[in-house]
Image (tube, rainbow, N blue to C red; front, side, top):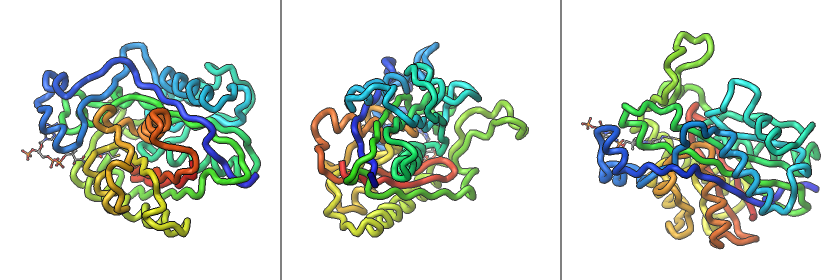
Amino acid sequence: MKYSRILGTGSYLPARVMTNADLEAVVDTSDSWIRERTGIEKRHLVSEGECCCDLAEQAARRALEAAGITASDLDLILVATTTPDQFFPSTATLLQRRLDVHGCPAFDLQAVCAGFVYAMDVADKFIRTGAAKRALVVGAETFSRILDWNDRTTCVLFGDGAGAVVLEAADEPGILSTHLHADGAYKDLLQVPGGIGNGHPDARFVQMKGNEVFRIAVTTLGRIVEETLEAAGLTKSDIDWLIPHQANIRIIQATARKLDLPMERVVVTVAEHGNTSSASIPLALDQAVRDGRIRRGETLLMEAFGGGFTWGSVLVRY
Ligand code: COA
């Protein structure tokens, strides 16, 4: 078996919703500013006591159910997250415990908003080399916990949620190609500076130079789309669906224009979810699979850009 293919998808959003109007009571902002600049209308946020693994577990259970397998059938568990519940153990092993799975490798992968794309690449390589047959790949985030709720330039942008995919070994693709990149030179444009032993123990909130990130994201995503098509020997018209990381509707529209793709062929959830970082692509994928837009045999292009910077794409025959 040379390939991996998507067997099932799942997602979960916490029940609590914060609209732009709700945010007007928190910071000096307005519904119209947020809508015009980002396309965001509302976002889901975890409640007190609700954690990243709770979101991951719900998404994972739904993906397993859709895949028609049980957790004991898994031989790899990956969780892409920037907001793990603990320093350690990893959220992946916390999830493994919840799912009552024992023995298979489980680990977290941190590539911020490109985390899901990175995790899909890794899971695909495990499967293609024969190291795993069935992998659970989750993107789960509680970004609301690393936001400064007094900083209007960041707190209006993000939301919480989780999405998951079950991959299995197959004779036919499946995942056609994956493309990953990073450039640490851009650290200062988008970061949470706090960490262990770096002199910023209290700096645990997102800091971002938004307009510089915007500019670089647009050009970088344009390049990754070209790279992906070229590597697969496909043309723009071969792409049935673009499933982009959901950071900003204007960034998404720019990538769709690059592909000559009408917005009807782009899965957009940013209005309802905000930017859920590594969860945004699997959330969007699951939504479009469940509402019947995405059908078996169609070609999907997923792409993401995030802190680091990190960026990448996954090309899939669904
Ligand atoms: N409400 C109202 N006004 C706000 C605001 C808010 N929430 N946030 C910023 N502003 C103000 C700024 O203070 C600034 O005011 P000034 O002109 O008086 O100084 C003005 O709006 C314009 O700010 P600017 O940052 O230039 O706006 P922008 O058009 O670049 O939009 C972002 C800001 C953040 C929406 C946009 O840059 C963006 O989406 N960047 C990419 C972010 C991203 O995707 N990050 C994650 C990558 S994975």
